[in-house]
Image (cartoon, rainbow, N blue to C red; front, side, top):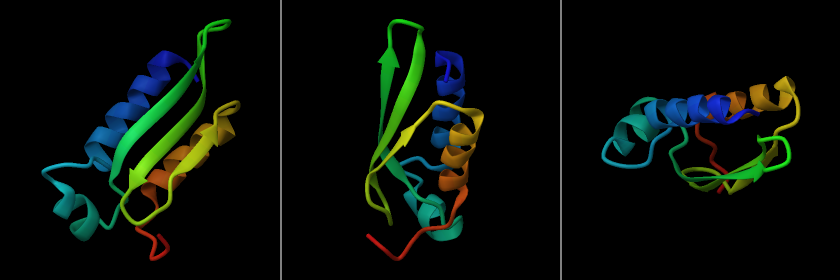
Length: 88
């Protein structure tokens, strides 16, 4: 994933899965996971983001995604769009 695509992902998270003053809206009204921390692993050899970790997620355990194909990026967005889980 390019840094530009990663920036787009962060903007999507900010608008749809943010942790903060609008948590009631995110978690209760929209029934979406609120994510507090996003960590990225940057490969300085080719300038790509190769791993993304979401930590302190409302309604879910921390999760790591390897980002090596468009399919893996699609899985990240699918995860972000899924409703809250009862499993913590």
